Image (tube, rainbow, N blue to C red; front, top):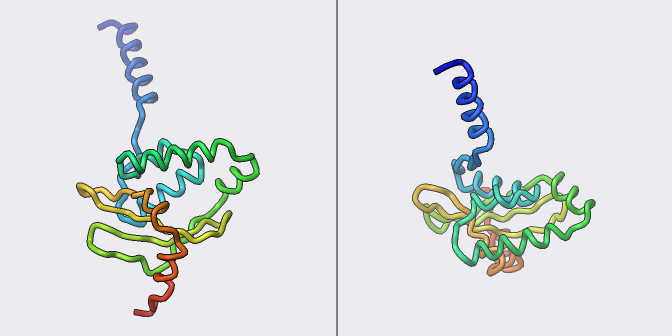
Length: 150
């Protein structure tokens, strides 16, 4: 192969490598999955958020609705979300070794909510529909009655 062919082949591989769509690494834990999902959603990166989502029609629809609402927010609100920190409240509820329910809020809205994270085939994924089915006014009240010193 001559120099020109080698250079063209090298450039082709470089372009393909730079343009390939890399998926984020799987979450190491339930809390990591929740954090990565929430951070991506707060930043408006719904493609990345989707990679931490349990892939079923209800969850995909919930995420599509959240993305649509996000796109219609004003710049001050978007900047508020992007600059927000995430707080997880303890203790999480762990009904079994494959399910965790975390109470959380972000510093911009400062509204407590819950998120269910499930382990499927060894990967921790967010079950977003749970957020809409179980509002915090019922679950969070149960969680806040748990003694955190145990």
